[in-house]
Amino acid sequence: MLDLATTQALARQLQTARRTRTPLRQFSRQYPQMTLEDGYAIQREWVKLEQAAGRTIRGRKIGLTSRAMQLSSQITEPDYAPLMDDMFYASGGDIPMGDFIAPRVEVELAFILGRELRGPHVTIFEVLAATEYVTPAIEIIDARIEQFDRDTRAPRKVFDTISDFAANAGIVLGGRPVKPDAVDLRWVGAMLFKNGVIEETGLAAGVLGHPATGVAWLANKIAPYDEHLRAGDVVLAGSFTRPTPAAAGDTFSADYGPLGTVAFRFV
Image (cartoon, rainbow, N blue to C red):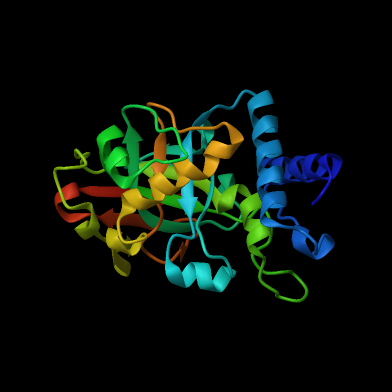
C-alpha cells in the first residue's frame, strides 16, 4: 500500500495533468507494488482536490464491464470513478479538442436515479425501481496517464487507469429518455458513426448481461467507504462498444434507433 503522502502527491500530479493537458508517465512504473486499493485511494484524493477547486460530483461511471476488457486488464470485476460537473457537454454542439489529451469515444446508457441506492445488498430489481429514467449517452475517455509508455510502449496497468478517474473525461447525454420498464434494456442497440461512417455497433446486453447489473455492483462496491448513489445521480453503466479515437474536426453520432441520437463535433 502507498502511504498517504504519496497518494496525495500523485493526485496533485493528475489534477495538474488534466488542467495542462500534459500526460504523465505510468504510476505503476514508478511504484510496481501498486494495488487496486492504491488506485482508488489516489482517485479519492484527486476528487478532494477537485472539490476544493469548486467542482461537484454529478454521478459515477462504471468501466471495464465487458469480459474481454476485464481479461485484458487482468481483473475480474469492473472499475468506477466519479463524474465531475465540468465533464458534461451538450448533445448537438461543438466540444473543444483542447479540453482533452487523446480522447476516445464510447457508447453507453446512463441511469438517472430518482432515489438513492445504498449497499451492500442492492439488487438489479432495486436499481430499476430507483431509476427515474434511462437515456442514451456517449462517454469521452482520455489519458492523463499515458495509455502506452512513451519509451517502451508498454500498456498502462489497471491501477493507473483507476487512478486516472477510470479514464473518464467527458459525458454527452441525449436521445430519448425512457422509463426503465418501457423497453428491454438488454436489447437496446446503437450504431456509432464517425464522420458519417459506422465505426462500432453493439447491444447493451454486452454490459454484464444487463446494464443495470453494473449499477447494483457499484452501489454495493462503494458501501464499505460509507458512500452511496444519490437521488439525481447520473450513472454511466458501461460501454458496449470499443473505444473510437477522435481528432479535431471529427463528428460523432450514436444512433440508438427508437431511443434517438446523441451527436457532437470536436473542434
